[in-house]
Image (cartoon, rainbow, N blue to C red; front, side, top):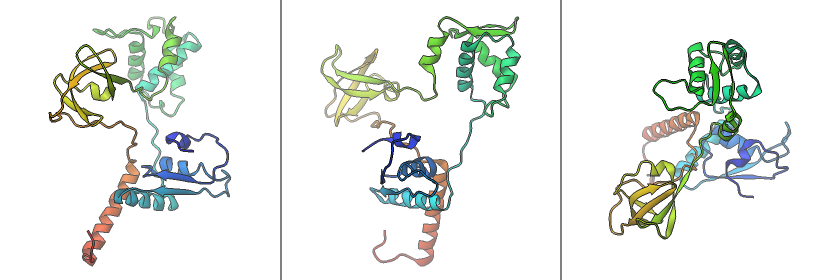
Length: 275
């Protein structure tokens, strides 16, 4: 079986003899131990087996540092966000589906029972409630719930349940644009990430499929371009965001390893044939 990051999510897939990680997993705990932990019998005394396959010296160094850190039980720290207002917004919308809260203070106390919101300020709480109710001055924000501050109550609207289930979660969705040739549209040439398209300006030259194109305009989910063969790109090549960033703690360990390696090379001098 060949898979992406799915198997690090703790799903039960039965017995696996060996996990082979292609390239550095970029973190000790999530990328390394969790993925390799998919193998074996999952018991306390069971042995999980994994192999790292590297492609260059940077990968080799990173995987070596990661492996030593795993054996030394030096895993990445877990950081729990405090008072994330985007999550608070989703929670309040979800709470409104349960009942009409007859006391804004009651909902506030309920939220503060959780670790993430135990230091939540009242003003921040009320600001989010007003935002969700569309009670923001000089704003076109539509309401997701109703709020009556005079009565101290809030609850759901007819559209609240659909809004909640269509927007639950904190992982943003990526939308792709279809690239077509010509001002009026023609042959399909490929697709671009919305993060790339939103930075394009008319006349920009970019590379797609080893060929250069000039950006003309966008319409809905279509990007109109014309052939720009022979012209130099004016924007950097775009690569999708599938590669996960290296964790902070692993980055620190890699930095220490590099520092120690340089120190030893300088102390011992260059060896024959070394780079």
